[in-house]
Image 1 (cartoon, rainbow, N blue to C red):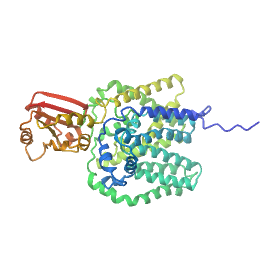
Image 2: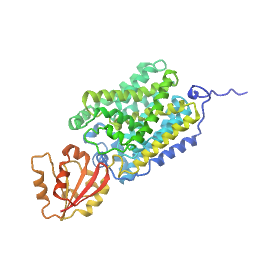
Image 3: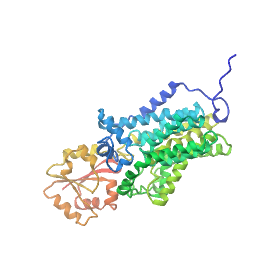
Image 4: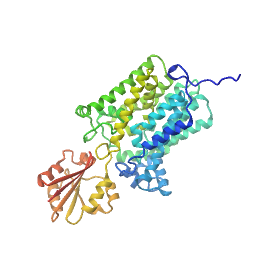
Length: 500
């Protein structure tokens, strides 16, 4: 009789593992891709303007973002081969977002068995946060794929040392730190994993790979210093709500909760949570199940390899960012800055689900996950009322036809690169007025509005938080003219009109 092949590491610590056909992974990947397609052609927004209009105009950007050039270099090449527009350009981050799904499967399979890989792949495919960043023309979906790739190579190294694999780990690490500065926090976690695997992999080889990444990053230090001098002081944070927001973003996404416009630092108050009572209860119940099963597994010494990897690659980077935020007062805890750790937060969700012994409990937990993802994605696909994306394209379409000799557009001082991208030449017609400046804003506005019959005011919360935190400009317009109409493109992005 032939000798049977050994079964994979048993799921839940007991019973048989499972073999997952390749078509199942392909099906999950296709489903994840389909979840990432709606609203792919939505207006460019936020920092996408830097990627589109500034940093991808040449092979290696010469701007302050030169310290993290790789995504922008890829985007430059992407544009050179003919991709353009919202959908065409966003296909690049979309590809990285889709690649995360099979990579998550391979990491779970390497970490324990095919069953765990399957569960992680499903969780990554349905993650509201990872879906959202798969559509953003920035480096965040790329760095998440890099992190998963790096961990797969790390786990391969822990099984059998090969210099080729060692070199691949170094190359991926260099790609990571030249793509996202905070990836260094992830490499600290990898260094701790090497320490834990020191019996299988000599510590000098593991940490030597990290040292090689450090050496290869040294030429980039001047570019990093240039960035710190230019923009290092612009990042604000409300510390008390930063960590809860990060955990919420990693699990239920940015759009799950219905939040009002927030001021500088994006503080979350108890009244905001109260207004989302039912949504909060659903998320908290699911979260308590995860915490309960993870603690239970720790106490019973189950899944220790997977649990420790979660500590090293999720908990440690978050703790380091928390300490850095506490010391500097800057926003190291911004979820997108730590997005490379998101799959390893989702690893805990996968482990918690797999640890549930009762079939009904599994069904209920899965049902909660489906409800959460459905709500989060329904909100994400309705950006006019939820989320963080500004519809510069919609505002430009209205203003392009509305602004003429008898109409005026007043803006606060700020960056309106995307407005001019969608409405070329409109900057010649607008008037930027600074309520904090030395010149009387009322006098400047009245001079500008002479002989005009209609005034538009585009209220963009980032500019408003910086230059008009008390909303004096809007109050001034309200006092001067009563006949007001408002078009809401987003809770944080509104176009006001007054007939004079």
